[in-house]
Length: 58
Image 1 (tube, rainbow, N blue to C red):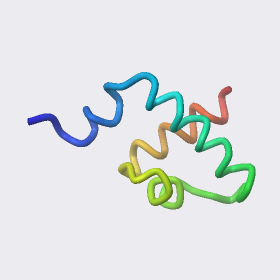
Image 2: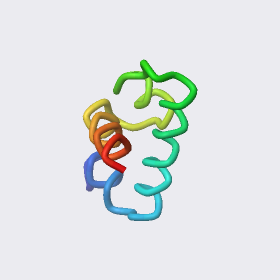
Image 3: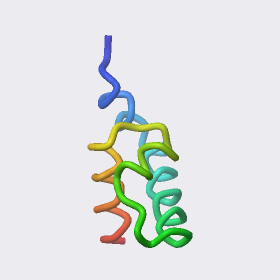
Image 4: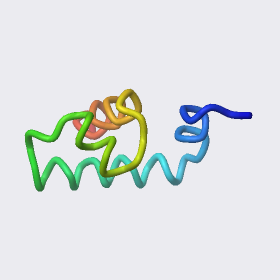
């Protein structure tokens, strides 16, 4: 079956929502790291780190 990573990135709408939610988490807590974002979004820490990089770039 597909791994968790594939499931997290295969849906572009979900991906965009997670980027927006990551931005909101950073607005509330500017010191939020990948572990906090991963816990809030229920994704892996590596995916959360990618979301943080994308959110900062936007």
